[in-house]
Image (cartoon, rainbow, N blue to C red; front, side):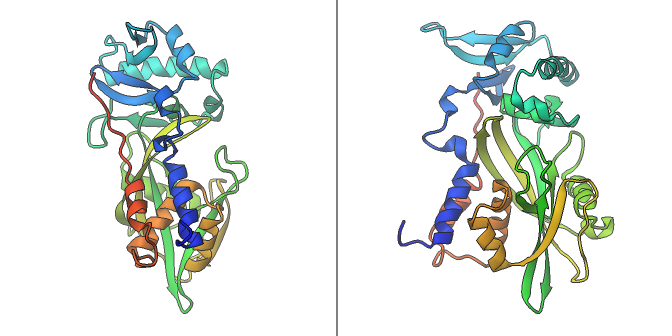
Length: 311
């Protein structure tokens, strides 16, 4: 790796950080497949398994005949509609939250996310956002690259997350981003985030161009995160200045591409936001296979798949 640039080496570390559960040293083998009927929808963390075992009216714990180890967890077949699953899990999660069953539940947001096997399918149930990582179910969100063209060249607007944010406080971020709430379209979500996080007018935000998505499989002390982020590019007027309204962003900076790249490599960005910027750099011609030999590997790792199994 000594022949590759410092920036490329640092970027590869960040890309693999986002895909931490796909790395050889990850605890993925310790996670338990989570099923609804015959389809896997997630991976349950070992830390929450003892609490699940106690909820034997809701979860069926299937053990190996050889060593009695937990092989998989299934949601009870008696919960045969999305509404029944949503209501039962809401009761259980509220109880776990009140008993401080897991650190992830301390950041309760009162925001429901849809759980699907695949994005194009109907929701199987809805669940409190912070609890998604306990069950390792797929999460979706949207991110905006906001930029403008000036005499100095192309500049990018970057936000700094508020120090009160429960995750990655004070890290640099895209100008607008957020999780996809249940029942909301992706376009409506990015327009909402543009308004709340950067005061981008609705008519301007609606001009944001969808430019694909990134996917990765991340884990930390809060659980498992198989995430897909839908990306948008928006060219902003030179006169535009963002202003935060929801308290989640403390500052904004208008940076050159070289400045953005340096801050990415120094680890100043929330890791998945660095991947969104990496995609922008590739798509806008700031990288090539000749100058960045890791480019094919970057693209591969930015489109990681979490293949679900059949029971």
